[in-house]
Image: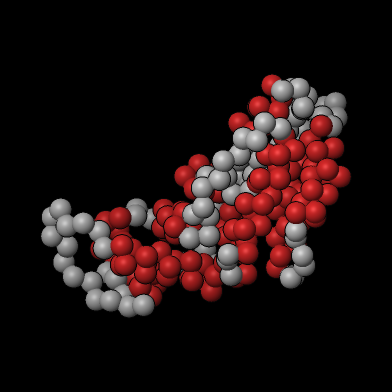
Length: 214
């Protein structure tokens, strides 16, 4: 989709079609060239917009990517409060699977690499888009501790290191990820790992797929 940018009169409402074209161009370019090579100029050219239009709405490419992900693969609202840690982990896993299946493989890899290059981008995605399923929200951990399901020194590292790695790898390779698989992942791997506190004098390192605890 392409269009010619026209001067915007004061108070003129945003054109949803134009904004969708811009945000769609962002996702296409992240998939094609990666986050590090993404530029405002390239987005403007791909969407048929002016750079001035983009800068009026988004301060930088990080804000553009957050807006594009919010409008695209992570747009579905998800409430993570089932009353049990097991239920919450399943909801997070289900949401991550839905998001990955709705995204092109290059985009998934581009966003993963972007998170490693720009930890602030990961933080903004979790805070503004909502739970992605790759990170364990602090409130989920806190509620589990309050219910007595986890020890007070529980750490989200095990969830954040394993969940994204496993699900992304399986989906990118076309392997099945059904409810039975998610339940086995939660019951056999995630719950036991989260229940086990860190050893004396040790602290988990940063998880690969989340910047929440970097």
